[in-house]
Length: 69
Image 1: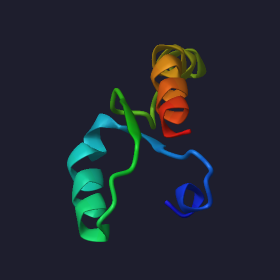
Image 2: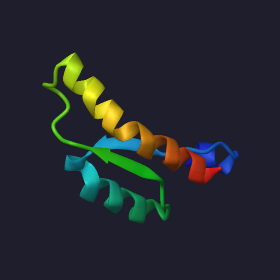
Image 3: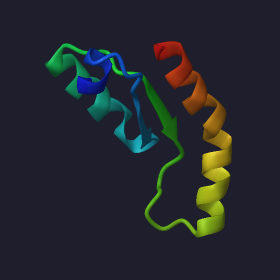
Image 4: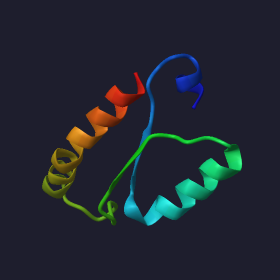
């Protein structure tokens, strides 16, 4: 959110495992960050699977940043 306060669009990408934790953290900090969630797990994915996840999420990520401008 430091970037946002400087006028730089920001957000985060995380796996769906962390939705509840991210919302709780945001509430505790009094912020409402832009976010995109991708399928969990990430750790054991092949490079090809990661590319596929990125391709599935890229439009949402670009939209998230664009909306913050």
